[in-house]
Image (tube, rainbow, N blue to C red; front, side):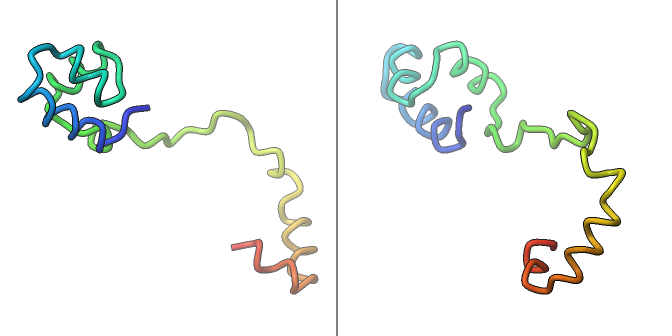
Length: 82
């Protein structure tokens, strides 16, 4: 995954390096990825979409009320349930 810092470095290096491949290598990314962020003109943190779906069913869904009740009875464990 490419960071904002790498893309900023790529932009800086693109002004001094003759080839994009060299600037990309110095920034620590693939040339294809460098082309992508150069054309997007946005940072990776601005491009990411927050995932709102679940990748699997909640394994505790059926018994969560029981688990929560047991945790509330054990005050030392309550710090883990927030």
